[in-house]
Length: 254
Image (cartoon, rainbow, N blue to C red; front, side):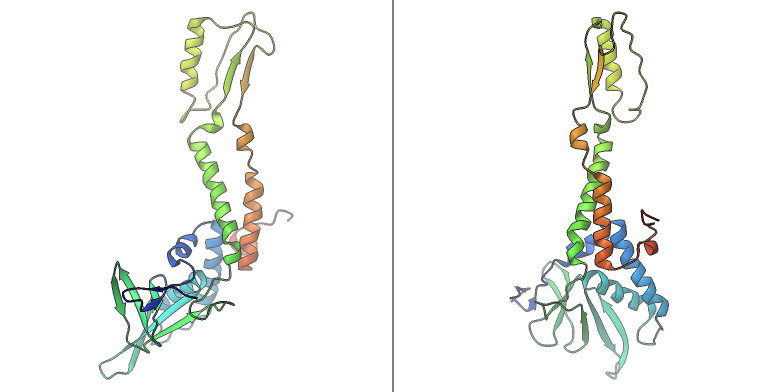
């Protein structure tokens, strides 16, 4: 069952949001690099044709790899003879309900309908689809999002200074009120830029554990960052079936 969209319900909605797939193309380095490896291999062997130049071929190949759909419009001359093939961005192109009809969504309630029979639609087949294609890497997309989430968490963790946060406990030996205020001001300066400054504290009557640093955030920070990155990377590479050496990655056991 496909949803009908557009003014008057004249075209089919794709099973997956094309804008989400497009943005997800750059969600991780290995995910985006796998597309580029395949694209470069295709471009290496491509032979330009008067009706299909290299730039157009690169565009439709990228559409097919990332979105599992690509569209080519046949542009005719004044005599009605084929002159060239023009790419229609797959992210904004939809299949019409009527046979041979295609539409380009150029904006809110702005539809450009192509001449019937002038558009070729290429797609990656799937079991429950006959109108739109489905990407073959779909099974690893959640792993790619998890990889991105782990990276963003760790980046925000460092930006907000949480990695330098701690509780300073002063026990036996104590500090005078003046010294405590001085130490408090010094600790405020450890967040953000310069958060790795060294500090000297003198406790004349202190003992071994009179001064302790407690890190309440350490348990939350131990999120197996490296393990998550490696596991999700392997999932993405398995879905793309691209050797890691081609992506600039060296196997851990090599």
